[in-house]
Amino acid sequence: RLVLALVEDRTRERRVEEVRRDFVANVSHELKTPVGAIRLLSEAMLEAADDPEAVKRFAHRMGTESDRLSKLVQQIIELSRLQADDPLDAAVPVHLDDAIRSAVDASVIDAGAKRIAVTVGGQDDLQVFGNEKQVTAAVANLVSNAVSYSDPGSTVLVSTRVVDTSVEISVVDQGIGIPAGELDRIFERFYRVDPARHRSTGGTGLGLSIVKHVAATHGGEVRVWSEPGHGSTFTLTLPQHFGSERKQEDS
Ligand code: ADP
Image (cartoon, rainbow, N blue to C red):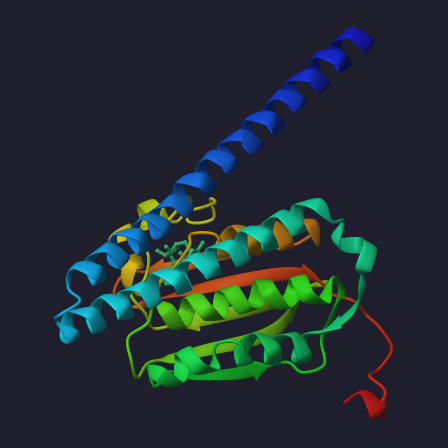
């Protein structure tokens, strides 16, 4: 039995190493794209020095690529931090009202620019037990996607409810939706349904893998329903925490 355990350990180690190597390869590939684009744009700018309109256009695209690069770096750091830390090291009762408010605030500029109304509803005063930053980041990624993949003027609804011993946080949009065949894959790192569209939305393909990781380490799960052309619903389910009532001075 000892031999069997050793073999299993080695297999697991090898798998972890493969995953790590794949991740590093993906990261370098993903970083090369915006870096290469910035390099080309700078050359184009130098060549077009006597055409101010062209210089402006290239400078604008350089800004977009830099934003993409910094979002990518930020999410890679977030993901590796998630994998290194035990989320329950910093576990505290997390008030979902606060986490959802911060998550929605993080998308306020993008939502405003597209005249998308993000509304929050459902049951108040729910708590989960976990890492507050991570829970907030997970909800923030779902809200940010809902805004990114929706047309201007549409609505995003974030709602909470209790189901048995869990709380459910749903983010519902009226956006472009996701084809049924892609639903399994969207939680993979760097996976994007339509990479071409990503150039304009600036997605990294990491958001949902962060959500999935946070759900798993908190003993929960994330699910999706979607109808292409009509919208998507992402539901994050986490075990409910029954803490004491919030003190007056906290609210
Ligand atoms: P990204 O940062 O690129 O958005 P994610 O991991 O968050 O990466 O999402 C992976 C893919 O899933 C996206 O490329 C997008 O195609 C699809 N997706 C995620 N959320 C939504 C949504 N609310 N509506 C439509 N498509 C979505």
